[in-house]
Length: 219
Image (cartoon, rainbow, N blue to C red; front, side, top):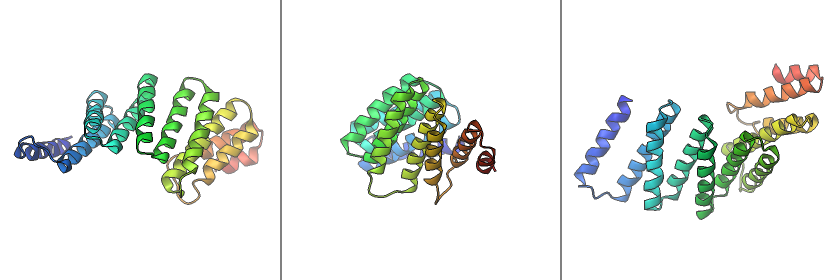
């Protein structure tokens, strides 16, 4: 944390030189710093200080009208909610995040948030509602002009979640179709989650009593 403290000290020096009269560039740097610090602390498990930083990002960005920074703050709080199994935090920031994304008509971010909304309902055991939200996310992300790595990851994650829901329902053929869709979305790059898609497909093949196919996915 020493380097974070050093950056914070230097940033405060700049603010003090301006006599508290911050211009937009300094505010942007300050927001970015608070976001990076908060995200780092949350990843390290220092949740109390981390969420304090992220909440500060949300408040400051609301005040300045920086919708993109406000949205990033809400997304980070959703991740915190997932990590700590806190559905109330998740729901609050998912709904607020969707409102912010709509304000500047960001379809891709709306798609990401609807996927997270689906995860929220999945954690609550509401598979049918979750699947409808995953489908909505697929529709939104798929409506963007071009498929990028980020879009592909979002689509793949949605397909994987739907596959898990179909698995739980005993619809193994349908589940396998969705796991294969998730895998194929990663044809041109290999995200860290790709191994999870193969494992889920392998488990489904096992449930279908298809040993050779299971071995292929798990090889």
